[in-house]
Amino acid sequence: MSIRVTTWSLEQTSPADQRPAKPAGADVTVVRAEVPSPEFSRFLYTAVGGDVTWTDRLPMTYAQWEQTLTRPGTETWVAYEKGTPAGYAEIQAQDEGSVEIVYFGLIAAFRGRGIGGHLLSYATARAWDLADRWPGLAPTKRVWLHTCSKDGPHAMDNYVRRGFTLFETEEADETEQPTPGPWPGAHG
Image 1 (cartoon, rainbow, N blue to C red):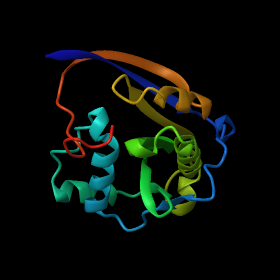
Image 2 (cartoon, one colour):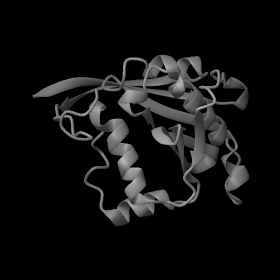
Image 3 (cartoon, rainbow, N blue to C red):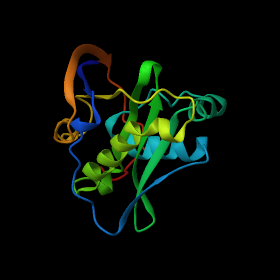
């Protein structure tokens, strides 16, 4: 069975476009996972994306995960609440000063508590100053991302409230896939 999926691409073209959310509270921290770890990144990917049908990376081998995570200008930023991973953002440098927020989201149990706006604000700021941490990268001129109709109901609103503007909309039919997890019966 197929479903119609709308994909929206959004961008910021200046650091002045940022509209940070209020901090999420003293119990929430955002930390860069500085050691690329395919195991940890796959955990985050399935824990965050399992109930919204993220499947594109599931067939990747360990070596492919490692190659993706060690690409210069790729960073994983993790939100923790009282030491427990709550969500993450993966950012990746691209050509001509463009930085994509490749993956962004929260584990279902942490949604709706103000953590998402805080994490997105933090990740966006880190995308804008990415070249400061990666000598040889061009300064960031644009930060962009995409979301789709399969994502959570508040995703688009969060992006717009953080200062992203729509630049492209696409629709396509996709084969409906079973929700991969993180495991049967998980919170969601």
